Length: 166
Image (tube, rainbow, N blue to C red; front, side, top):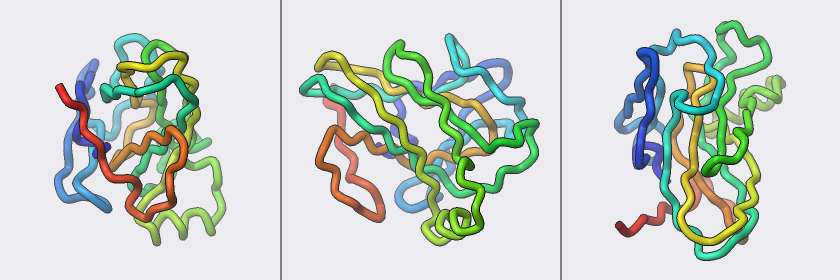
């Protein structure tokens, strides 16, 4: 899914979401504003992007979130810039995009123009689910999301987008 194809963008306390056209590998990017906003605790009605997805079967899925590369700039969090991810009402998984602090990792992110965060989820039933990408640290630009239900082939641009029929 392209990041800008969210079903709902939830802002709070002056935090909003902005689509940045023609940014990144494919269509665009989405970021939170202001970039100076303090870190958020992902829960309840805190800022997030929501994506409605229909699954034909219950399964374990992995979510690849494609972000523009960024340095871990000082924001009160010395560990790395983070985002949260969850389906429906499951507990939020907080993912650190700068877990690997090596120069080699940074070189790869810049050369590929992408930093991919990964999470795994167990969907207990088929049908409609809501994927939530939560704001934890400002300054991240989400380009694309790939949900792998099994059999995903490697691709530089990520899987092509499938559409939700309304």
